[in-house]
Amino acid sequence: MDAHPVKGSGLEVGVDRTDITPLGAVPLAGFAAREGQKPAGEVLAPLHVRAMAIRSGGEPPVVLVTADLLWWGDDIVASLRSAFSARFGLSPESLVLHATHTHSGPQASRGMAPSLGVPDDGYLDRLEQQTLACIERALITSTPVRVETARVGAGLTVDRRWARTAGEIPVSPIDSDLTVVRLVGEDEAAVALLVHFACHPVLHHGNAVTPDVAGTLADVLERDTSPFVMYLQGCCGDVNPDRYEADGEFVNGGQADVEDFARHLAELARGAVADAAPAGPGAVSISRRSVVLPLQDRAPWQRVIAWAAADGVRAEWARMMLADPARFARDPRLQLVRIGLTRDLSLLGLSGEPVSHYGLFTRELSGGRCLPMGYTDGMTTYLVTRRHLAEGGYEPYEAPLYFGLPAPLAPAAEQLILDEIAALVAPTAPARPGPEREEVTRR
View 1 (spheres, rainbow, N blue to C red):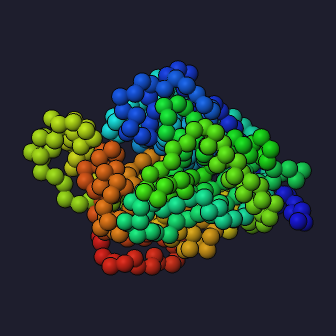
View 2 (cartoon, rainbow, N blue to C red):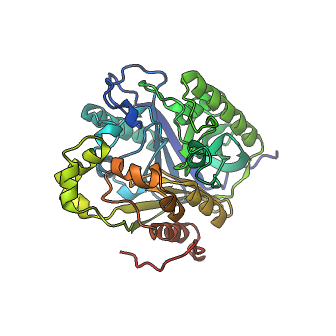
């Protein structure tokens, strides 16, 4: 491939990687089946936070952070943004916090049901300080780069709602492609690599610390492909590794399985890097939107009181509502952020756990020029569709209890989410109506 000079590309980046592995035993987040187990002291592989400061045209930088965490809780996002602005004199809105969604790291939210993982305050305090230090090191470096990108089919994942019900729930399309964004310096050497893929990192189910597939893939590629790699988690709310038996049983794996899966993805990423094409001159921008999501009818308050005296996640949920009645009355707000990297390439983050439908919509609406990400700038809930609500199951009805949502999403939420995505990705093109579109007034 012919060389494309960096001069005039208009994009500069600074990067840093910092270890955020717990120093001692902590409870892990992600699997309610771990409830009652001792805090995890075994570390199979380290966890990292990675920061990239992105600049163009002499404007203040946009800072993208990824971390090997289940998510960033809304409370942690607010605290970090405030500290970020005070420490660096930058707008808090210029900080974007993304998580790889590993289910084998500490809880990074104080607002979830305890059975999903109890937060360790000491770890969260240290996480905030390490993240700010990581950002600081990224901000003091700046390397001119050009941007190249490529996309390749992976075929390693499956619609988990279909697979775990052994076909009882009809299969839905998923985004099984892997996309690389290569940032190349003046000496034609790689400066950084972004890898976008949509897959729940749930190969490992044990009570031990590991970044699972997402963080391990970044570690593998940093050894032989690029000195700095960020994994961008796609819309994987209904996507798991393709490891299901015919009866719907998922085959749990250990760290060796995690590393095998990551090496397979790394081979695909290296092949894509070899075929990467220019993505246009740098044009960094950031824009945000938010929308209140409508809910179904809430349970009567007397029933909530009765549930609180029982056992299980519904009881945990009820006690959360009783402890904070304002939360029970409040509808959730979804945050959306778009980061423009070049005129032809951008990232779209959502503060929830989006299913494939929203990622595929974003891909199609943008002509493949926008990479959709979940687990960004907080955690609202599973972003399911009208169809999922009709089918039932974990994502639309059980998961909201763990998230502390007052009630499941209403069917009208789907179109609101699509409209907000369209407003950021293609503001001049209205979102195409979904099935049985309802006219909904935004609140």
